[in-house]
Image 1 (spheres, rainbow, N blue to C red):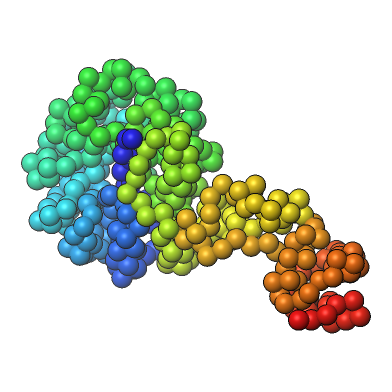
Image 2: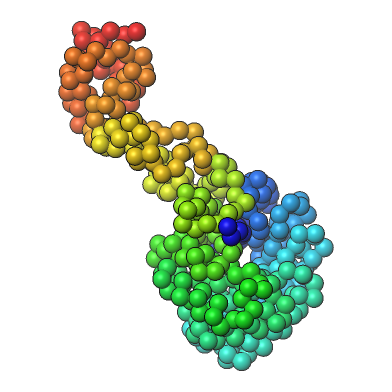
Length: 388
Ligand code: KIV
Ligand code: ZN
């Protein structure tokens, strides 16, 4: 089994979500929750960005002792110095440096030639490595970078002291097949591939972030970067809970272990949702309110006969209390009968049909039939029921 490390950037890329601004106290609570969830590295922030970012990275570095804590820096001396000041004296402090490598970023944003980019990587990674044993390097917009040049940037970073190479799909541009081929190319063209950790960082602009990250894992990445609930710049990042759950549910396929305590997933997602003021959508995989709810009669009937007909994991495995069978116009008589029996009614087989006709007439006019509606319905049908 290979081991996949989880690098959580909820506090850095996640905070780049429009409207999200965690207080220092929030950041510390989230960092502690991430530790108990089992992540391997917390990216606590971008210390040069603001006084508060600096303070929170420093505080998290001091308070979190059982997990690696990293700070982000551009390939710029003052950014690296800010990470050194924030984390340089903490036992678990690390640094993550990045520079854009794609033609569009080199030309339009950095105004740098390829040679200048290479020189800058060499200078800044060596500088960061003087202070930090562990240096992560990211060629920003890697998936839109010429592959042969990407290899040069990565090897330069490795020779300068980087021990983690992260491949960012900064604009969510790639797809699972292509990122798999890119990792195969890197493996074939970087003799040092197995001597360092290869990581992947995907954005969700085309809805592919989780799929792309999983493909990278299949093709050699052993670290995954992402956020809780998939929050992050624009359409967000890979949702770490989706990757962790996939690796568990399809352990037969991925053959990969993680340190994530899956049954703490829901409480972690709820905390980040509350502190980011971003509701988890009902249809969000794993943690959404509908993820373990069964609405149609055919599904409800199958689920009641054997949960595995429509559930590929138990809600408890990710920390959700139980599945639910909301009753609505698509529900079948099996689910309605089971629900009424759970509520304490004795349902005579001969009356099931009448009850169900009555139920349908109510359900047709509203989205969900509540317990109160059922009580009222049964009161109206007293002649055919016998409350226990
Ligand atoms: O998306 C990106 O490229 C980033 C880097 C800083 C890793 O967030
Ligand atoms: Zn990013």
